[in-house]
Amino acid sequence: MIRAAAASPLVALAGGCGRPEPPADGLCFAIANEPRNLDPRLATDAVSERVNRLLYARLVDFDGASRPVPGIADFEQLGPLRWRFRLRRDIAPFSDGTPVRAADVAATYASVLDPATASHHRAVLSVIARIEVQGARTLDFHLHEPEPLFAFHLGIGILPARLMAAGHGFQRAPLGSGPLALARWPAPGRLALHRRRDGLAVELVTVKDPNVRAMKLLRGEVELLQNDLPPELVGYLRGQPSVRVTRAPGVNFSYLGFNLADPATGRSEVRRAIAHAVDRAAILRWLFQGNGRLAEALFPPEHWAGAADLTPHPFDPARARALLAQAGYGPQRPLRLSYKTSSDPFRVRLATVIQAQLADVGIDLRVQSYDWGTFFGDVKAGRFQLYSLTWVGIRSPDIFRYAFHSAAMPPDGANRGRYQSAAADRLIDAAAAEPDAQRQAALYRSLQHLLHRDLPYLPLWYEDHVLASRRGVTGYRLAPDGHYDGLASVDPPRHA
Image (tube, rainbow, N blue to C red; front, side, top):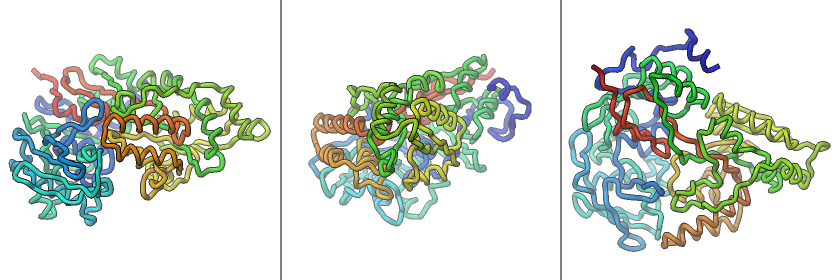
């Protein structure tokens, strides 16, 4: 099927970088969805956030265990309510040549805290009482109350204060101090950047269909593809002499979500039965062709708060049938459920595999697929029994409050399954207030054991990241969270 699609003369090849051969001084990177907002205060979609990481520098970054480390500033906690940041002397200026100063940092965060900006970061940063600029390179954040995880929230790109004051439209005209800068935005679906250290031209072109993306790579119209490719297409590209395919372990967490307010999926026996009925290992092996690893919790074991000692829910159809019988379901009274997913063909195929596995234990699962806006709107509104999604780029344990605390029901958070547990609330509150890192990690591990038992989510897997590039492209490093940071280090093919 893939070979036929790749060879078809009907595949549309218009658009893209608009050239049959790549120039010697540039690269074209094809992506599945275009960025929507290049203002880091306002961006909410994954592609915009990934592009913004290239355009703007941040106070804080993260190490391999997801601990906060200095970005453009060293930092220290001076007391329970005071954090100091000192800008490094060697940081790059803004792309218009003006230096980055502490006043720019202060103005960026003051803008986020301003209700008129309508930034989704405002809620988590409302702990800031005031920001005190100590000089050109130093500033202090004073907090309303102790917040041990404060540094985790300071990954917002820094904008120039003078342009914010003038009402500059960063959404379409970004200007930061990151490794890349905007060259032009000529049309929807085409974003031209340049790398500041050497002037390398990088164009991001949106090509939604993965087969068309692959054909453009094979024809040399683009040099790079990352993710958003069905496994069989990855396998096909791996066999092409002009293409190099690499993969790396990912940390983005895929899960099956339950509505605990529903009479059926709200029952523990039903959720546990589904956990034993889904053969996650077989799905990874055959559907994903091994491009992933099983997950037992939102954070992978290598995360500083990861719970490496969780015992998997084994694939056990007999146990699943026994649990369904315990809940009052069986051949004479089959359990009928609906499962909502996006209309992406691969996600629909995944849903039908889960449908078949649940049918083997007597669950009649109806798959309902919708366009992304309708699907995600239903999830946020609680209009589901089961659904599947992926948490992308999660670093801070604050995600547990946002997704599982009983006070985080939509619209106040993302507890979309209406999970309510006094024990979970106590652990979340205690961990958030714990200043000692080791005790805090232990509390989060206890919480993950509780969630693993209660199953508001059924953890599925962490999908691998895949890069397909033209032979001769070097230096691109895949990031564990799927960011495009490799564009800061990639080298284009050499042309004679």
